[in-house]
Image 1 (cartoon, helix red, strand yellow):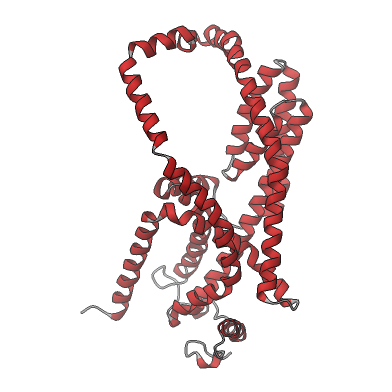
Image 2 (image 1 turned 60 degrees about the horizontal axis):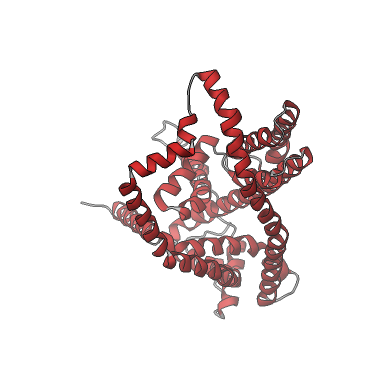
Length: 397
């Protein structure tokens, strides 16, 4: 006969499967909601601080929302023109790169590795190859043209999603505490102490990691951009910012930056002194990241090996596309908290061979704190507050 505990496990398993299926099916629609929820989560502590100083929730939300919009507008006004100028310079620099590749790189490869790659980049060879496969090329061109023509809906959806993010962010900021209280009410009462503790730990780990990682990305991008600009690299600002932006994947930022900067230096200067200076900039950036920026700003907030981080990002992108990339590290951080808790309970269980320890369970949340949370929720909703003594799942200290 099936026990009540087994029935509950099956129900939770089915609920998790249904939730994952819904996320997979609705991934294109959920992207602006996830981005907006991230902004709401990041801005809620500031709103709470302003509320603690005597301002109303609506006033605090308006202040924080205006500050966030102002910071974003300032970044756009400063960075976009500069990066656009760098992109224009990149387009003007491409013929020079092609000339260097055919005149310097390919002869060096032929002399060093005995590989003659020149015919494959010769314009006459490429034209003959296209002419010999004209029908196939025409079919590919028609397919590409049809794809571009049919992408109007995709462009409209992208613009709509971008326009939705500020609106949704405002509502997430305004109603964040209420939404968290609603989720808390759905948690089964016997599981509430454990879920509350795990949620608090996940919030601390995730908040510290994301804020610290964003600071590391900004600092690394600035170091790379300023260093390459000081060396005299024309595309230094663009390469530096791109290397800093992709540095959230371990070692990817340094690899992309070094590769692009070395090629740009060889094309523009072609001497060992500038090449050594460029490599020195990235060596300095990696040293600062390893011994100063990451230990100071991130620390051991997430406790994940770099291989696990790369796998999480790739797996998220494969399963859910861009939404999966956004959710990869947050979900991985929460899973790490849950795995640490599971390991803690397992090593103190009878299954592991240890004597069962009642103190190994996570401590119950403070009844006073839970009563304050209930009071805040009731104040927002206009309902009477529930006292901690009214909850049968919480025993008095």
